Image (tube, rainbow, N blue to C red):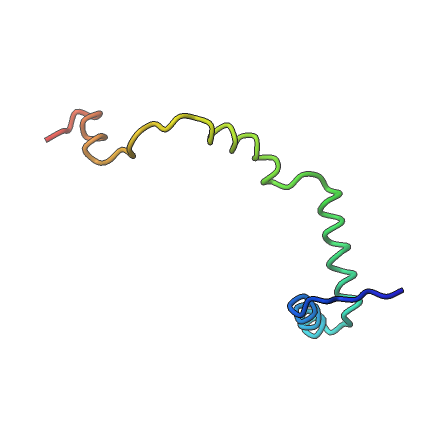
Length: 80
């Protein structure tokens, strides 16, 4: 079986990783794909788990300008 990589950046990355790990390109690609498959099988990523919360927060109305020191001083009764 053959696999043709037609992206120079991908090929260069695969060759560099293989060299740094002291293995062949086929082995380094196999490891990378296996690790990715294992992560995918493990379930949703943290970002996927947090996405509903992120969307809920994004949907909230703007609460106005960011509070500054004067705002907190007024709340605590320390306004000068």
